[in-house]
Structures are given as structure tokens and as C-alpha cells.
Amino acid sequence: MTRSNCSSTSVTYLNGHVIKSVAVQDRALHYGDGFFTTILLADEWILNWAAHWRRLKKSALRLRFNTLDESQFLQQIAQAVTQFNLHNGRESSRTRVVKVMVSRGTSGRGYAIPESFELVILIQVSIVPFRVEITPKLNFPPPPVPQHIECCQTHASIQMQLAGVKHFNRLDSVLARTEVEKKGHQEGIMLNALGQVISGTQSNLFLLKGNVLITPLLDLSGVEGTTRYQLSKHIHELGLRWQARHVTLKELHQADELFLSNAIRGIMPIKQFHKTVYSSTQTLTIHQWWNEKQSQLAVRLPSITFKNT
Image 1: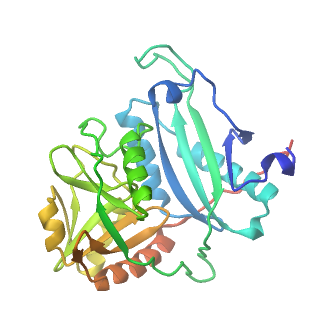
Image 2: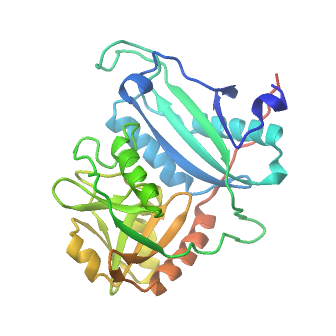
């Protein structure tokens, strides 16, 4: 590989080799048959890896993929990041976004899952416009400016078998995200056809009411985020009680504070939802706590050696 072939803000690798397209018969292209997760990498540390690996395993189980090998995924991520740093200059930005995509490949024709197939793992590495440092001391970007958001007209799909899974069929988010950007907003709130509050277009939603942290139940719609999962396990450290249940629009207006979470952007305060204005005092405390928690949950990339061809 040469620098001219690889130098980019985003490069995708298959088994360590740069690719710019997928096979036209890939089931991900025909049927959206696959799943993915998007990871923030600081220096040589994968942030929140346990939650991302849980997502990958859970997705594979729900979509009837083969059993996944964690060491295989870590090795492929490490190889892709090493290649990317080698050809793009690791000193320019040590903070990367790593998108891990899993497909059933080109095996079989028609909707039915083929009896046998070869797992395809694609690793996309991108530069991000901010710097996160894990060592020698924690250093995250400052908290984002509180957002002004509204509801999207596009509904989150209702599908019990797929709810929570970050599969390739993301057309509802595509349409909703387009609405948000046309309005010049940073995010928008999605409901499902039952009128239940679900999430942002690319984030999970949280309500603070006293000492209770409430988030929409994702039994019918939405994606279970990796940050959301870790908040459910650790938020008691801040003296807050976790509650996942169905949420109405009325409850959003009655909340003390609202915020969003995303694996790359972290905790994002909401300043205003339609005409309701919120404080961000507790949210900023959660933002700082989550940054510190991420450093504790980070996993170092494995060391690899390979021949550059």
C-alpha cells in the first residue's frame, strides 16, 4: 500500500487490506443483513469496549450469526488502526472513530439465512476533530453546548425482534436525521407509531426527575446504546436510581433536566425542547463522571506485527 492510496480521514479495511467497495452480492447490500457498532479510540485505548463487545455478541445472537471470537475482532481492529496510523500520521490526531461492521457476506440467495456462510468483518477508521487523552491523565473535550431540539416527524420503527439491535436497516434514522439537519438542529426526538418517546436520531434520551434517571424502554423500537448500557450499571455511584420504562411527551416537559448520550459525543445536555427550558446542573456532573468512568472501562489495543505489502 502507498500513502496516496490510504491517506484519508476515513478508511475501511477487510482483513487488514484497504477496500473502497463491497461485493454486489453481499447480503448487507441486498437485505441489510448485518450489524455494527461505532467506537471511540483514544491513543491505544478502546473506550467502553465491554459494552461494544456485548452489543456485537447480542446482535449476532439475535440475528442468528455464528458465535463471535473476541480476540479476532480485537486483532482486526488493532491491525486496521495500526495501518491507518502508519499511512495517515498518528501524531496528527490520536483520537479515532472505529466502526465495526459485520455481514454474512455473499453466501446464499434469497431472504432465508444460508445454511453456511463466511463472516465478513469490516473495520472503518476515521479521524475525529477533537482530542481525547487517557494517559498520563484523563483529558476529554469540554462538555458540549446544550442543545435546542424538537420532535421529528419520522417515527422510529416498531419491531420487537429487532428492537435494541444496531442492525444495518437504519432508514428511519436516515429520514429523521435529514429532518434535523434541514432545521439546523443538532438532534431531534423520535417517537414510534404508538406515541412513545424512543430516542434521538443517533443517541439515547434521558430524563432527570429528582434523583431518578429515566430512559425510554426499548422493547418495541430503538437502539440500545453502549453508553446507555453502562449508565444502567453504574449510575448508582452518583446516588441516582435507574428507571427504564415507556415515556410520554408530557413527561419530557415535566422533567428537571434532559440529556442525550452517544458513544462518540458522550453526554449531551438539552437546553430546550420545543418551548420548555431545562437546567443542566446534574447533567454536567454526569458528563464529568462518565468521562472518568470511561477511562476506567478502557481496554488497550493488542500489539500486532504484520508485513506491509
